[in-house]
Image 1 (cartoon, rainbow, N blue to C red):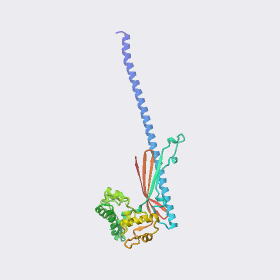
Image 2 (image 1 turned 45 degrees about the horizontal axis):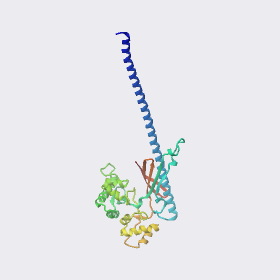
Image 3 (image 1 turned 90 degrees about the vertical axis):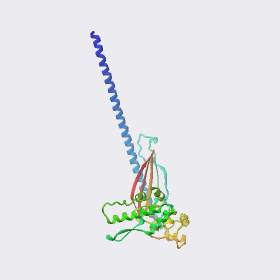
Image 4 (image 1 turned 135 degrees about the vertical axis):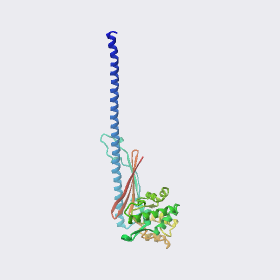
Amino acid sequence: MNRACVGRSVARPQRGAALLLAMLTVTLVATMATAAMWQQWRATEVETAERQRMQASWILTGALDWSRLILREDARANQNSGNGDHLGEPWAMPLEEARLSSFLAVDKNNNTDDVLQAFLSGEIIDLQSRMNFTNLVRVTGDGAETKATLSETDMRAFTRLFELLDLPASELTAAANELVRTQNLALSDPKPSASALAPRKLAHLAWMGIRESSLAVLEPHAVVLPTRTTLNINTASRQALAASVPGLDMARAQQLITERERNPFKSLNDAEVMVRDEAVQLSDLHHGARSRFFEIRGRLRLDDVVIEERSVVVRSGLSVRVVWRERIAGQ
């Protein structure tokens, strides 16, 4: 074999190795470029999500503050006029979905087509339009003699409500007994116990024996609040009125609703004059024409993302304080 043939045979493997090295280099560069592009895309997505979260936070917080201002001004107006809280007032008017994209931060290089579309809607609900499960427990005594007992008057009212809504009375009995037991343990035993936690909202009554299907039926008529409350006769449902007012049937309850739509009641005496029946017993301990507890619901739609928020507030004079607040995100 001459030297030329030997040179050609050696050159071929070298050229193959060089080609393989070049292919590996191209592959490595492409992989690094792809990874860099993915990281940039991911950073952009994270930044977009964070921006949406921040925008949603301040918009919903602003909506909550705006609602609190409405309730405060309503309290001021009622102090001056002596009116009760009723469904004809500004706070009771729901906010239909409104476009808020003009309030969002827009980069100067973007045009209006690039602006994130935001839509806000919401409503304020009088929670004292509903019967309060907390009323079932009455705390009596002082010091070591303090104890929780079942309020028979409120138990009869809730029993009537369960009958009107065709719900099993056994669930009410179980929940009432558990509420009393939990309260007594909280008063007397500082150690952890096997009892359920005290409910903060209606859904928590599922811990105490009321099925979720029953809670869904109860929601328009019942609630769980931190303290005992009266039922607002200007905003309560027909079922809540008929259940809570002794001697009041569904027909009379509808008459009350019809009358309050024309002339909202300023006091219980106005309702008693309208009913004109001694068998119908309205009591200052259980009924009233004004409310302190309200639920504020806000719904924000950012492009295809929907964020909902619920807050319970308590009004004391001209002060409106948030009791609890929760946010629900969904598509």
